[in-house]
Length: 225
Image (cartoon, rainbow, N blue to C red):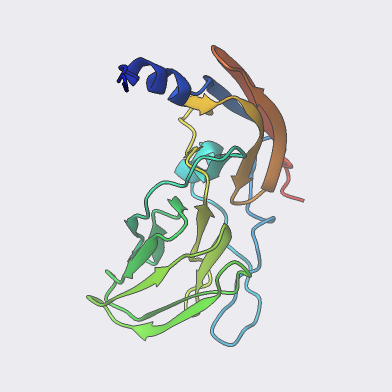
């Protein structure tokens, strides 16, 4: 005779994964005064143009230029998204986004002039060609990495797209703080990418319960050199 026993509780126990919380803080160790460390900017003929100094509001909060990602573990990436980066007043808005792998980014032109958006990034190079106000172009991003975006016509236009397969990513708040909950226990790399200063990493261990506090420092030269 066969007997059937309830196994719901057993299944729930097996599927429960030890996980902790991550709270973090990014520290800008020096204040940026000019964008001398900005990546190379190209004009229409391919010549290098000096980028302009940041606006006061932009320089006042370096965390607005920062993306943080927790790398490691076996969790799947988030579902792909569709994100819009406007071209408005000869600037990208927003000028830094983080998207899951497989996401698409739309580049509508809201200016009464032509733009020609492109990237030479190894992660995903592209050139969208010239197009006028009211038109838009779309790019799908299929690989992890940093995609730096420019305009062939306007050397001051610079944006960045951080593409990640990690489900744990964030833009820090104005005080540099960020957090993730229910991160499976294990060893991880905490990565911070700043639009001017570049890439920085530190390693952390997430406990089976409770939380871990992490700090990552972003050194930025005072004089931009």
